[in-house]
Every structure is written in C-alpha cells, then in structure tokens.
Image 1 (cartoon, rainbow, N blue to C red):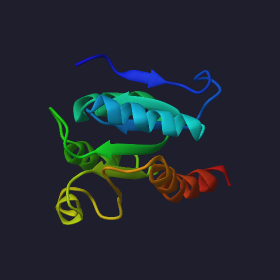
Image 2: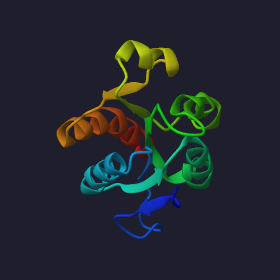
Image 3: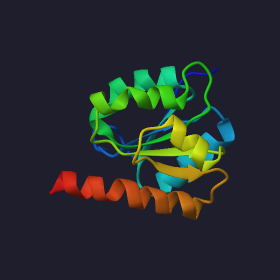
Image 4: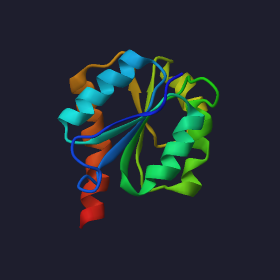
Length: 141
C-alpha cells in the first residue's frame, strides 16, 4: 500500500475546490482523478477508509465533494461515511460501487448519490454536476 496521492490542477493556495476520492483499485482511482481534473478539481486520493479519515481531517476546509467506494480494505467506505454527518454535513458524497443498489442502500446513509460501477466519464461528470455544483453554488452565494 503506497502513500496517499494528491494530484492538483493548480497550487493548493489557489485551488479551493478539492475532491476526496476513496478507492483502493489503482486503475479506477486514476480514471476518476483524470476525469475530475478535466472538470477543474484538485484530487486527493485515499486507498482505504482509515486513510480517508486522516485526509478528510487534513483537507476538509477545501473539500467540495467526496467519491467513496464501499468495499475497501481496513475501514470500509460505509464505516468512513458513518462518521461524516457529525463532522462535515456540507460536503456531498457520491458512492461508487459494483454492488446492487439494494445492497448499497443498506450500507450507506439515505440521500447519498449512488454511481454504479462500471461507469463512463460522462456518467461520472453528470453525477458530479448533479451532486457538487448545487452545493458549490450555494456556498458562494
């Protein structure tokens, strides 16, 4: 397991729109990162729920969205999400999973956007637009 990866579109002091991607599969994390960077976001990648918790605390003030896989080593995505409502309810979440929707809904809080794997770059961009943009626009108003 490698160190967390942070890929930025511009220096951190200029970019306030970061996305925390919690995904243990390298190819998916890279794919999501490329799509999000193309949309103008800085990307922070965590490989499991424990690392996500640490990175969340470190970067919460810059986060505008989190994309979280449910099936992760060490601490699951569902366990990571279970602590968030009390920490930072302003940050929207998209759950990425290959599980059936009924199985996902049993594991995550209500009102979480579910993005089923496999997904296309267009599907990811649409999900990000639906989930993140209303929150970002409201925060800037």
